[in-house]
Amino acid sequence: GHRLGILGDFPQAVPRVFRPALLRVCAGGHVALGAHGAKALWHLNKRTREPRRRETCRAPLLLLLSALTLVSWPVPSRAMEWRGRLTSDLYVFDGEDGTHRRPYLGLQSNLVAWRGARMRSLSFQTYARWTTDFSDQRATDPQLYVYDAYLRLTGVPHGSEFAIGRQFVYTGIGSALMDGLRVAYRPARRLDLDIFAGSSVSSRNPETVRSLAGFGVLGGRVGIMAPSSMRFGLSWMLRRSDGSVTAHNLGLDGEKSFRRSSLFGRLAYDLIRRRPTGLLTRASHRPGPWYLSGEFEWREPSVAGNSLFSLVDFSSYRNIRLNMERRVTGKLTVLSGLHLSLFRGTNVWRASLGLRSGGWSIAWQHQDGSDGDNDGLRGSLTTFLGRHWDCYVIANLSRYRVQPEQKDRSDAYASTAGVQWRGTDGLSIRVEGQYLRNAVQREDFRVLLHLSKDFVLYSRAQERTP
Figure: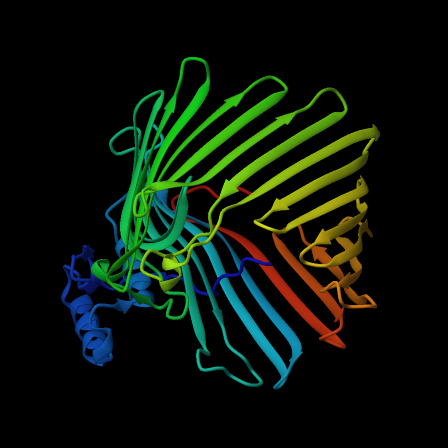
């Protein structure tokens, strides 16, 4: 898939009424500014909110207020810098209810308001996407998705990083998109601390900020570098949903790197059910032209603690993966792999073999087990037509049998073809056609038009560079 964001811009001049703009996010979800004009905006928004959303506030308003706070921050103008990418897409496809024409507008950017000595900086990260349907709008259209909108202060004090707003957080045992605060600190050369707290973002209502009591997310990680260059990590994460604890996990991981090899292991423990829920080991080795890698995973299904499914006696399963690559000559490489999934009473195995060289690749895969008897052939080709032009083709052909009782196997075809132009000023244009046909979808043709523009803007007092 493609990561898309929303098209937008920041005001060139901030009105005096918004200076100074001091943002405070209180525990009850209320937002206040130190200027009368911003208070008026907030109270106007507060009066128009629906009664059922008393514990939420609008994410677009927080996005605007954060931007105004950063732009009006009293720092030297030489430090201002804005880098990012604007995207615009049009996706045309046929659905069961007719033809759909969906536009996407996006913005991914980093606005740096201040840079100081010893890697100190203050910036505003943005990643958002807006979409609707020109043909047949859904109940959620138009929709604004805000994935990143947070202020980040680094190096104050030295070795620290503070981020407040909407952001993605990850530990070795879980991840979340949240509205909250993350603090990272390195008190010593071999010790890293990372903690975060906030409320999870709803996938159905991403424009709202939910309450901490109902949808809180807490977590952290401690990383230690041993004298033998071995890394250890202790992770913890707690999630709430509708006021109840849905997940409370603890994880321990370790990693060791050698000149040609690497080892990794992780153990997960469920603090609600008080038992281990996962074990992952991974190893790789590169002797000369060979590359060998393997993975073993044992885990239990991930079930929310407040779900009725947590009362079901479910069993664990195991995954075993082996991959081998051999460089024959130049860029020509032989690829092979074996994947086993071991369940209680049934197993699934997949084997693959292929070739890769430069701009093309071809691979065959076979699968057998509870999911049926399947064979597939996949190929891709990329050709450069000049300094700025290139075209690509991706094709997938497969035959599958879903159940053993099925006499004849069904056919499935999927292909993608496109052409792309890349300019020297960060502008790129891509036109892509997609075709799909299988036993359920007799014929499906789609068209994607993608435009992207990279930009760099500096303050007037700063020298422009390419």
